[in-house]
Image (cartoon, rainbow, N blue to C red; front, side, top):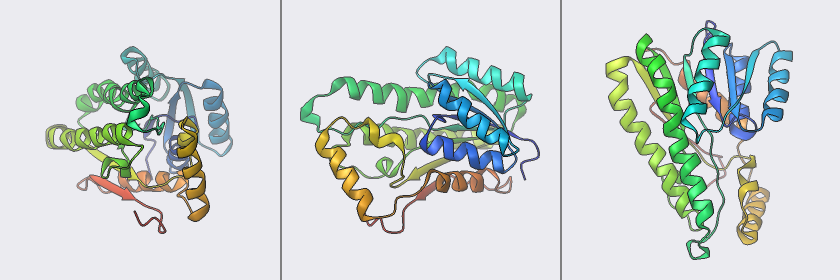
Length: 247
């Protein structure tokens, strides 16, 4: 069990982030849940509290360095410590490159890459000072392979995977901070609601009928496994796939 440990989870208002928050809370962690939609966070916090857990909703836009720093400070004030950061916030609006949806490209870079860097930078001083902790960065199958219509999203998730490995190599031996990069395959989540291209949205809907997608709680189980592993073991990379997903 977690021994009253504390986790901060970004992108926690729905999907994978919410699933991870539920699983960490059920494993005994106090969870600070961050996202932009405060109403959704408050509902999740009430659900976790009702189940016997402890949750703190924190309004957070990960693209803001100041907001990330404030989220860490609120977590420390509420719970007195920070042990795990789950860097999960992300967007996935599919479109072909020649559609030139540059606003979507920019938003993905801002949230998926810069947001991940911002959150990591915000939590590291605390973890470094205590010479312990765990940073979990959410990449994707798109961080290992490239798919048409997902070129920019794949680029952002490849960036997260590269950053995670470099971070692990630097902070694990020096500060005893473990780093895990989680790379899910198809997961039933609100990511698909970001798709503005009707053809790609239809493809994803068809795909969901052809195979059983993972549930957000499946990813939550993987994260609990990684953070609860013995101290000498760093689960550096987790590639978590639906059994039926053959690509």
